[in-house]
Image (cartoon, rainbow, N blue to C red; front, side):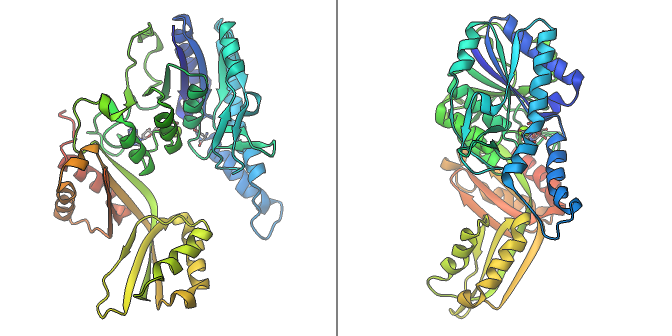
Length: 425
Ligand code: ADP
Ligand code: ASP
Ligand code: MG
């Protein structure tokens, strides 16, 4: 007998038939004698709809300026998960499985005060565990918790993954299975590259990079949490036939295991390719080339919570002026430019330019630590395809290139092939 957390994402609970299918997966595990907590997302598309309602309401109500109350945003967008948790509990009861739904505040899942992007701080799993002993399945609404102000909080988009891993850590589960619409973690997004291969295992560090660099199969914080608490996490498909899976104790689930680096026998130099859309490039032309100039640019941007990513400073021709180029998410561009304009005199630049709709493509692999020249392969392959690189960043186990968005698919596929990741078929 094992203690399991099963998480089902939006596509897996998109309608009543799919929720019934999820209930069959849950029943299979419960029938095998396991203690089961289930974490659910909202039905596919529901959270987007709720977010849009929150955005549209002030305008419809006649406001002239945007009105945003993060606590009310959370009250609205958390409701999607409440619906699926209740529906799944009903489906399970209809199939003879004892189950009840749990909202974040009922457990409770305590979070930070950062409404709309709160962090989980503490979970009391004792009541869930007590009810396992009575044979009850817990169906938990993902993505939500309760903030110190006693109001509902949400964890940022994709946050149900983090709920699942955090619950698994809190109840000391043997495993956390993330069921989704793909049957594991692939060498790159299989929607972009059909030749992507499923990985049997991926190291925590690599998964963390993949998720941070755009592979939305897992929320970044869920990977951090799994790494810190040593949660054995699998990514697997909810579309497999629930009756064709062996749930007996000791059986290894189909899918990808996220694990310690030491548990991977064959370490590849490159494990995967990720991409992140909606990047913008901002260039400050003819900035004084003197100590303190970076602080005068990036200090005010940080103070306004502008998320700066890649930074490139060109060598000045005459030793007095230089260009500073950096990237921010598209959604931060307007704010970044107004901060830079407000600090124009202090910084002393001549011109500010911006380009929207760029893409960051990244190559990830722990093997890069011990291999030189890995990035050179990418530069040559991209050049051969005529893809211009606007900026480059590198670190121990990854490097990224910034390119124009029209080349996204071509760049991902080119790099996938260049590092020998294409499947044989
Ligand atoms: P869920 O609704 O179950 O949380 P998501 O849409 O958040 O599912 O994540 C699953 C999606 O992640 C897949 O449909 C796939 O397109 C995308 N994805 C991106 N990169 C990868 C990758 N490397 N491996 C697997 N899936 C990936
Ligand atoms: N429903 C939320 C979202 O769409 C959380 C999740 O699905 O993980 O972002
Ligand atoms: Mg997700």
